[in-house]
Length: 511
Image (cartoon, rainbow, N blue to C red; front, side):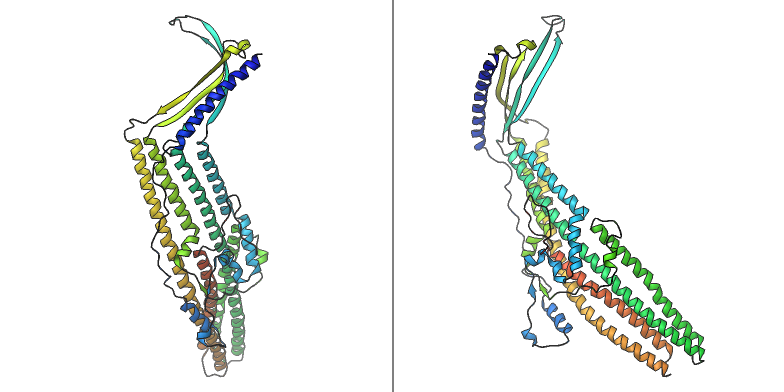
């Protein structure tokens, strides 16, 4: 019987609560939202990049030894499409590089940290959304209390038992909660763009380290080849000295030339080993993990056909750092509304329903039921300007976010322009080094012949060999720089990521 009575009591109180919450829902539907509505910023953009694609065509024509078509019939530089940017490293046609990129995306710790931050921001958004709904808490307790001798019941002792539920709900009259959710949502999107930016950086750094490794290998190969050539020269001079047709000075000159070349090799090996260790770190592995795969000599990847990057506006829409700055601006704009809502009254509906009794045996009887329900209004009437100054703070932070957004665009434009310049002009430098290396090789052969025939002294041989080694080393560095500048160009264009669904993990396509 007691349970039946309690159910009737609870049902009646629930009906009242539902009615009041309905009223507050209707109130909330007519609420206003204070603070500025976010409008994506617009910024004047140049129509095209300053570095014209004609430079690429010029280098391509110069690099081609056999012309089969007229210049005007040449294929125009290819426009870099968004789908190509997602997997740009495949244009280098190096399966090992592609494998290393995939492993870096899977194991890199910075990328995992960025993914964890996305999870954190999503949870924060969940906290902000929870403020839209009522909170219900259950409670139960027992207390033994004695009244003061100064009261009307001196020294009286009694017990109090209770059990029930408390509920509270705030009507979002001025949109403070709504703005908070807007800000949290934009922060989630900003963290996702930060993840994308980390991915872009990771892929480019993995490729740059790989090219650096291959560059060191090419430089080592050139140094070792020159060492062998200079050892042959040194042996030749020794034989001529033994025959009495040269001097000890000539032998010592050949010796220091040889030893100088030998001294370069350990430095190159140090750089080679350190580059492999850096690549292991990018993969989230211990130093030396990838050494066995990379120690075998392989030429530096060749550059693809010439590229055109498109218009600046499209590049800006793809750059994750620009997108992140824009989302941070949106989040901060919503924070102005959150701060502004503190100027206005807050309306809450509070309610409780439960059982109270001075004895445990009567707690679940019909007369133990109790409830309370009603609105609560709070208003910061005087707070010494704290709320208004907080609004000014949020306004200033929005201004800073806007400046950061504009700065990110300028940085992105500079990155692309500088990468275009470096890529085009380094190709011109490489062509000059190819010609100088070929000429230097001919000079070495000719100087040896003239020395052996007695028409030139040994200094001409030394100078030619030193020049050949220098040009070969510079050429290897330049070939690495060309492909490295192309990688930086792809990075500047925002290549290396694709749009990701909110609940999906960041990944790089394998095909």
